[in-house]
Image (tube, rainbow, N blue to C red; front, side, top):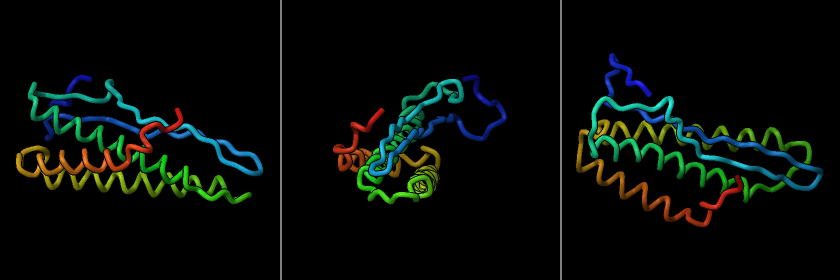
Length: 139
């Protein structure tokens, strides 16, 4: 997208985790997607360093999409409670993701701290790898 010229940050990555679910009287079914919004994402500078930081934001969204898939696949069906339970799971994952994204920006100083940026890239890759089993979420 067109950069927001008066924004303090050099770039912005917009992502979401989308969910659609249904159930009968015995089981839950769902689809989830990790979405990148190019029309809401932008950069003011052409820099591999900045792009790597922004890629980290998308990778964090992917990580939490896997965490959502894991939580939903482990869900113990409770008739009459499915809507509430799924909403609670989704809300908790979303809140954890927002905190994780903010901590990533804070600790890397929005990519300005190269040592922390490298540590975070390794951490994100490690956590994604640990959840490889949940990479094939239903879409």
